[in-house]
Image (cartoon, rainbow, N blue to C red; front, side):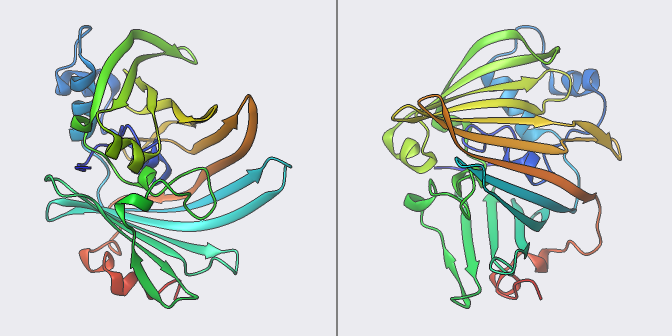
Length: 283
């Protein structure tokens, strides 16, 4: 799949919100005006505007991830995330700090602005080396959460058939575009793991507020963003919640809460986004 800088991603499940980079500079009306979006905007125009809108520079965040299984058992994790745009790619490094059995586990993602596929490497301290994640394995769960490796990349909207379901939808009283996305071929569906998705994109900020994904076999994934506010003039979400449901019953839930967020962090430099730094773990 071709990947680009596309924050409102079809298979991304608001991953950019989770990584604290799903953000928009300026006020809602300014965002729409700059993007040239009007009442008759098409799905492709909305998603293109979201893809090219400005985001925070040299972003560093600390996050808490809580995974709850069908029996109600919770596992809490803390990770840090760094992200920046450099030399034609959006680079993201995620590193787990706790619990002890996950400390040092990391994921490096390079999403290219051109037509190249995204690159991902996973580092497991027990193996003491990083492993490139093959495209065919990206629909697998990321460290047992409700997010997949594909969710943490930003796919090209050209790989999907788009349809505007409602140009005047509302989520908690906020005006949204309700857009359907269907993979154009079996390869894209296999990589993402989704038969189709629907998303609700805020008309005020271009932040995705809600998503529903069809997984097949009566399984669905629901994602919602909350606590959206401006920091340093940039819209961000404080909490991201994903639930996997089968035949009407919740199988699992993952909540990602932003604990800290900094823009223009001097520690976020290009040299950070290498497999060498990934393999240093949580040192």
